[in-house]
Every structure is written in structure tokens, then in C-alpha cells.
Length: 64
Image 1 (cartoon, one colour):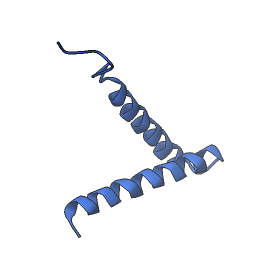
Image 2 (cartoon, rainbow, N blue to C red; image 1 turned 135 degrees about the horizontal axis):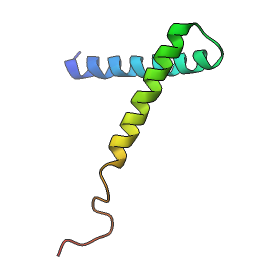
Image 3 (cartoon, rainbow, N blue to C red; image 1 turned 60 degrees about the vertical axis):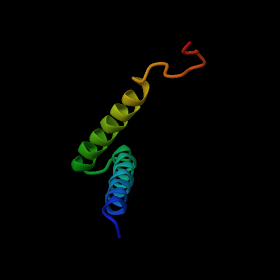
């Protein structure tokens, strides 16, 4: 197995675990699930914001 696959599987496991903690915390889970849920939601917001910061790259305009 290549290192890239191992890293991607690790990221997938962390993402799924974070989503589980968000649901569990919403249903009144233990305090540590609230901390993990908050970190997961913050990471999601950061990823979403980084995707938006690209501005309007190649959006129908011409580069004459």
C-alpha cells in the first residue's frame, strides 16, 4: 500500500469520526464529543472558506 493511500484513509477515518461526534454531541453525548464536534465544525468552516477565497477564477471572462 502506498503512503498516499494510507494518508487518505487516515483523513477519511478522521472525517467520519468527526461526523459521528457531531451527531453524538447533538444528542447529548459526553463532554469530549462536544469538543471534537466543535473542532470538526470549525475545520469544515475553514475548508469551506478556503474554497471561497479563490474569487472568480476563470468565470466566463476572457484574457485577451
